[in-house]
Amino acid sequence: MSAGRIDPMEQFHVAPLTRPIHLGAFDISFTNSALFMVVVGVLLAVLVSGGLKRQLVPGRWQALVEMMVGFIDNMVGTSIGAGGKKFAPYIFSLFFFILISNLIGVLPLAIVPGLHTFAVTSHITVTAVLAFFSFAIVLVVGFAKHGLKFFSLFVPHGAPAWLMPVIIPVEFVSFMVRPFSLGLRLFVAMTAGHILLEVFGSFVVQGLNAGGALGPVVAILSFIMIVGVSALELLVCAIQAYVFALLTSLYLHDAVHLH
Image (cartoon, rainbow, N blue to C red; front, side):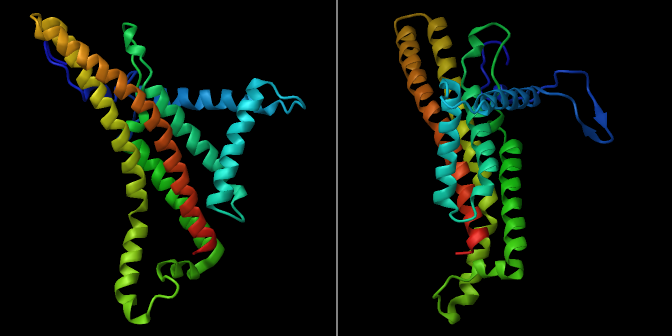
């Protein structure tokens, strides 16, 4: 960030927190992105540990975890159906990893000098790994359960034979696009929200520094927009985690039941 100029993309910069570590041609230095992923993993583990007490009369912590598990079980049961119970641990981990990552990314830690959050889900590398890993599970499950019959997924029931040369390529392309749309949707939603917050934040600072009659007005209006966008971001954090987990469940339904 140069003097007098705020770069809204600076918040997404991946910076090493240790001395550079190289493994051959690869840089495996511990970065701020890796740090926040570790933080998310630890928070998720601590949260789930409260549900391992198995008390007959659950406390608030255990009740919260049981409610979370019930929510995922209901999603899996509705979306995947029979045989979907075994995928519940993965969907649970996926949903709450994304949710906690999203929420941590909007924490206002920047009000403390030297601290700021890092939204790992605002990086396409992270969302792409999650999306392609989920897609790989769909492929493994589909071929393991059905073998070559899995390709019948691209042949809709009841479609006339003379349309197959058109329908099959369209179905195949729409199937292969799934991981790209899955990863891009989360990446774009989180990145756009953080950029908006940074832009309106710069308007507040510049409005206060501008002086005159118009400067404070711009600052106040921008601050109101920050409050509104922040509230919307909290909603988007939950929605995007839910959509990612739900679509993964629906893709697993196709792998398990074909149609």
